[in-house]
Image 1 (cartoon, rainbow, N blue to C red):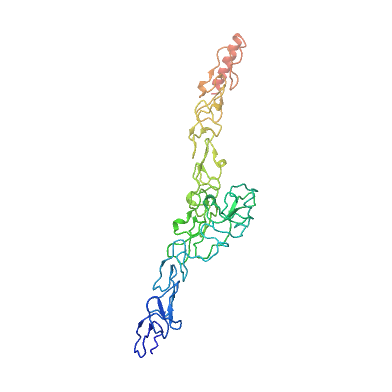
Image 2 (tube, rainbow, N blue to C red):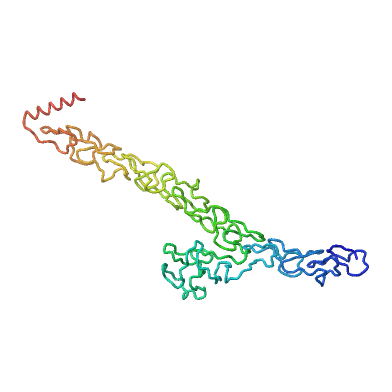
Amino acid sequence: MLDVHGLSYCQTPGLAWPTGECDPGWFCTVGAKSAQPGTVAEGGRCSPGQFCPGGSSEATPCTPGMYCDNHGLAEPTGNCTAGYYCLLGARIPNPYDGDTETCVVGDGTSYRGTVSVTETGLTCQRWDSQTPHEHDRTPANYPSAGLEQNYCRNPRDPVGWTGVWCYTTDPYTRWELCDVPVCGSDICPRGYYCPEGSSFTISCPPGTFSNNYGNRQLEDCIACTMGSYCAGYENTGPTGLCDAGYYCPGGQRTPSPPDYICPPGHFCTRGSHAPQPCPIGTFSNVTGLRAAEDCIACTMGSYCAGYENTGPTGLCNAGYYCPGGQRTPSPPEYICPPGHFCTRGSHAPQPCPIGTFSNVTGLGAAEDCSQCPAGRYCESEGMTEPAGASGGVELSEQTRIQSFDKELMK
């Protein structure tokens, strides 16, 4: 009998050439007498997790990314289910090999293990305790959730997260996820996605995260939370808050994204998802402000109306003065006082000149000050009333001399 090193079989004695190839779904070792060998010595039928094309000399482990779910397969049954990844020799499209008493499957609601610390090492609070955190996820309210002692569980996902968690004994940290292993290595883990037919996991890219198991596509990786950033790959949550002076509208991979530096007229505190406008009465003509206090009080003599100002809106009106930080051109608390006048753009009142006075508010020019009347005198600046008369010719002469001296000084 000719040694054909497998692949074929020789059904009768005295053959010059093998009878034929081994049947699909079977494999034939050296010396096989049948297309479907009945003894281990001659070969056999392919088992689940294997496939055997026609003429096979040995069983072929199922191709990575595919599964072989039955005996006697000539080719893999199909692709691994999206959300799982199939290693060499997978038997089912969604493989896992764990025990839900000790590991997590899917969203973790079936977990009944005894892990009682969070992924950062904090001790879990008992489910039947209201200290330090009050809550409604008690054994009485969730009788089928396995809320025993202080073991990590998932009675219901808080704020949309998936996975087992617990309230913590730290009064400043209400709850955290627990670091419980996933059942088997075949369910797509958090921070990854696994398309149909995957033989390995694919990391969620920078700027995204995923805290779910069994992600099927890139779109299952969540854009990083607004106000936060997700650096690097494989993120299961945001890395941290956006830096002050910048804002993170979502999907950012760095705490200081250059495309989102805080613009002029705005400020951005730490963790901002959008710029906040500088308040009324202030402005900013530079980028990267970190707090409202960084906005500049409006320039003296000017006003800054509304929000988001990158410079003063305009000059203060005549009859008023603007000492700085004003939001209107006619601030009522800064109307020009008696004895003074305020030209347009004034930052302080100017006194009426010698020889004049004013007993009203809101003068807009020196010419608005009243001339000192005959028989009276105004000997200093900023007078609100003329001084009293000193009588007859002497007063007239005194007034004449003052007027002459004033003319000489011009």
